[in-house]
Image (cartoon, rainbow, N blue to C red):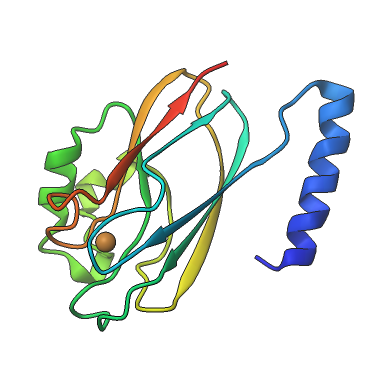
Length: 151
Ligand SMILES: [Cu+2]
């Protein structure tokens, strides 16, 4: 998303916030590196809050060797199983078809230097929502985090 449209979004949301008491959008900047780590492993959001996650792959390894995405899962998902079932599906960014309904938001799979952002509405139900990188072995290597929804 372009900076100008993001600024407009922020202004619009702020105006909305004044009149309807809705939290302004939350922007979360996350990087992924060649060591299978997200720079942000936890953040909070309010129920129903608009959230913008921007992911950048700051690694240098070629995309075939290491790529990163950011995938937020429903609370009902069993995260290790979700990741495991996705591994045989590079053509689907390592997300199994039958598990896709657990995905609340996701970025593209990114090679070195690439970035992507995703805008979504935080769930209305408070609690802990896992996020992962689905590239094989990255979750096992620690490429994961938690978005906590609370008032
Ligand atoms: Cu990764």
